[in-house]
Image 1: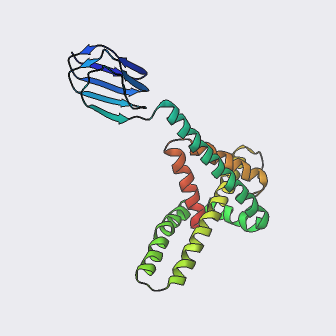
Image 2: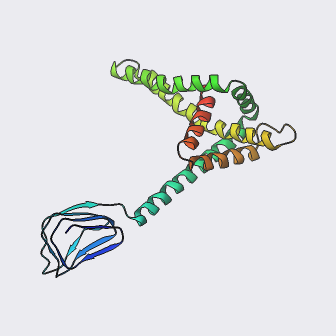
Image 3: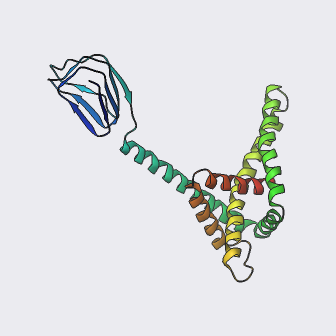
Length: 219
């Protein structure tokens, strides 16, 4: 009859008259006494091994991502997120140190006009690249397009740094008994930690980070 196996290390070393289906296995081996008359479908991390003497038909093989590969990719993603957050933490500290009063003004205005700024930020995020691409396509204003994109990228970097400061300030205000300073290294660190945690929350975490950055970008 039919043989269906899922997961682990699979060894088939006997006669099977029907189709054979192996799903999400780590490895699959057909022993020397294996006799498979039907179709063979294998989804495994490694290619199937057919021993001498085994009688098998053509194997329909699809490589599966193993648990080790998933863990490795998860580690790479987590490492990338941490490095990304640390990089913008440094940027936030630099912005807070170089222009503290300007940063405080930005944070106050974003807090007072959060959703308006978010809408403006979304519009700028979409429209500016389109304008730059049109200028390139029409072969006019190359320098203008380059300056436009350069300013666009710079503004995004600054918006990300300010987003950390804004988030940290909001969190400190929620737990502080009195109004705290708007810009400080503590504010930047707290904001970076909140963003780091949010980055690991599916959908909602990413949406939170995106909207906060938009609000600061729109300012």
